[in-house]
Length: 220
Image (tube, rainbow, N blue to C red; front, side, top):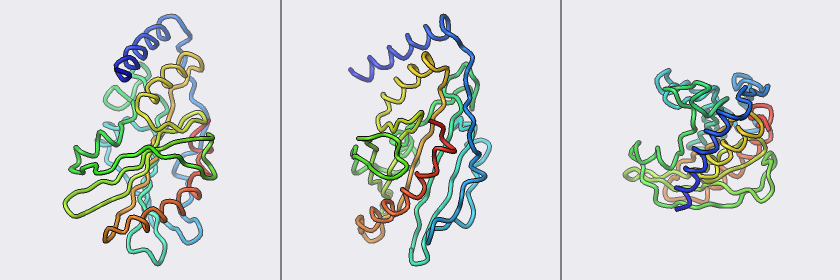
């Protein structure tokens, strides 16, 4: 019921905004992920990954970072994905006519991954702009493979874990600030030998190093 009400409110708010409020979109200044550091102490990414034009268009992403960070002692590393969307509404253009950020919890099953644990958990780390923030924590499986996934939406100083909240804030910010920019932050860590604690430790060690730099790339 909540999701339906939010969807209706979003449509009404966007109609009102588009027809009666200022519609000149604001695109804040930011750094390109081409300048994002690839070393944080022992953690290093040898080379950022590129996504194909077709995938980029489907995602509707303006700028992105896909990088596998690892330490010398790690068997596997941590894949970091940060996708920045300068706009999330159709009227302002975008991949396939739409820029809305795709929820990972919806996309993972389509890639063959089963979500076997799905929680909303608190997060507190340097670089998190919001007190009492919560994020999504998933454990996913494909055959015998297991991965730990943390993700959230981040925009204008907010850390958002729920899809319906993201939709609502896009409408509000468009109406009040002429901004619909936002980002998806995702960390993916393979779980080796059912050792979830080691995967968790890797996330907790790397994430603060990445997040402290985000304000230059994800405007508040």
